[in-house]
Image (tube, rainbow, N blue to C red; front, side, top):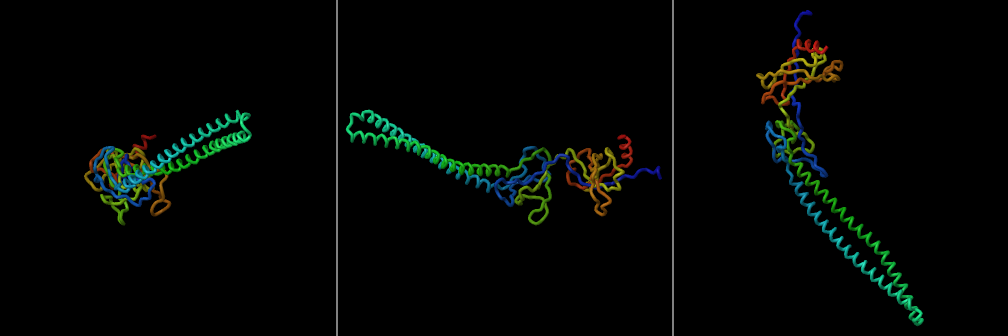
Length: 315
């Protein structure tokens, strides 16, 4: 029995692209959005270049919000400018009053310099005028700083309100830009099967998709691989670098050479027994055909004889 030729191992798995980018419905910043409506969608299987438009969602809500916030921001900015103008006028008025008070104080001091020449009544009147001028100037200077602080606080409140509205407007504009998604790489468009409107299926124009749901992929079909589960019993027959033949169930005439690239070392419990584990293996696919796409079921025939040569070559 030791001279019997080793038997080939057949594994079943799914094709996958080595390079792929998942396309998700955009997350809307600062808004609670239940779903987004698709208004434009490239067909599945379309070959696209990086930067091409893949999908557009209805952006009317974002545009309306942006316009509303723009108008509100303009109004609030006008209030800020108006308040600043009022403060500038009030400051100029207060500064004029201080200068007038300083002039009155200087005049009162001059009158006090000739108090010896004045009558008693006029001297007392001059002293009263001096005391009043000093008190008036001191009060004006004290209230001047308080008025400026109060005015700046009022203006700052209006500025904060304006800036918050402007920030909301910028969010709306950014959200509007997110409604148009572009291809991140060159490749082919592949739709994912998702839960929509109570059923599983691929998205179409007019469908609604929840934010964050990956509904599409852009894959580079130039480099493909097959992911297969491997029973623990078959694991000793596999070696890294082992040659194989990959057949697509949907296209029986297509056969590609392949090679075992990796085996998950940890594995997971089997479906029928926790003692028997399953391992995930990845086979590369050499060659290309327009029909070779991701998510196709495939059969991988592994030549056990090549396992012996692969094993001996690794020693």
